[in-house]
Image 1: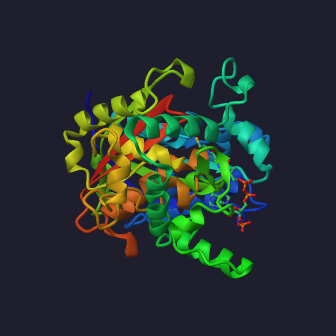
Image 2: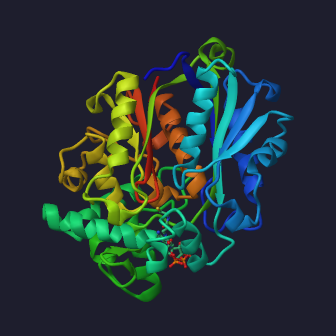
Length: 411
Ligand code: COA
């Protein structure tokens, strides 16, 4: 599988992800905010008339906002008159599906410039309703009536992983601890704090003294959500949007001297129901999407300098970095404990703070990962910059791994 025409990212933008600050704004307004930043981040400027299509990931707009027909809505609100535009949906991988749609539109020769992005406006509903909205990414015949939720599914996966590899919940905490360290350095992140900062704040308020991060994480202030997963094992509920501008080989230099190439991608699927799978410690769709992307980009896992992976729950990051071939089976947590996935480690993972700390407005997540990789590969990631990053990867899971996109970018 190869692209008939090369495609480049020439601009990207995103709102801050947050659970409170976007109160009262609609999804379309958030998308416009991200789109305006993407336009303003095009080095040599861009005329909105150059954009020939807009593809937008939004998982459940009808549920959150009683709003369908997102495609023309965001085209109109972003001031892009009369162009092709529709919504893509693949649960949490919805905006990665938008990006792949945009890449195909350019690679086919149809268009030269498109905008792709995503949005989710989740916080107008209470948590139990959000949990219900998210659950429709699971199987409505076999799973949802049994009370299956996503924290519940990943809790099962964590239990199997712990038993199979002899890993403890305490060891797993190295992942959210690292992601909060990174997220504190990211002005777009929902929680701009390390876990130790939260521990100290709660300690001050309640007259408590937590010895260290783990002492806090083991306390009741880090409540159990679905055993063994606790609050800090979970990505939060968030509002936000992200947008990326793609251009063809022929046009990209009109917009920037530093285009970032979409060098390869893969998108694969698996059974939607967890109970139909024989292996809970690997996601078949991740492995397959990874293989497709590596092949198309002509690179190996060792060539990836930075990766944004789908840590919707802490255990998901451990499995992702094994599925992508960065670490051996059963060694993802150990790699994290040893600092190998930290910003200064050999394989920096989730420099943005990941879904855990940056936030996870479902439809916006895929192209927000692209935003981080784009910043890193251009050397614009500020205090979280990875030195000499030339090849980056995004890994975006839908549901409990029923779909997955892996996209590889090169400077
Ligand atoms: N990590 C750290 N802190 C969190 C948090 C998280 N994941 N979620 C919420 N908080 C904090 C909030 O900041 C809030 O504090 P504040 O008011 O001082 O800002 C406090 O905890 C209470 O927040 P609240 O919204 O009442 O929490 P909740 O109990 O209703 O929801 C979860 C917590 C974990 C249940 C919810 O975030 C959740 O369902 N996450 C998973 C989402 C999901 O499944 N996504 C799809 C993945 S496939």
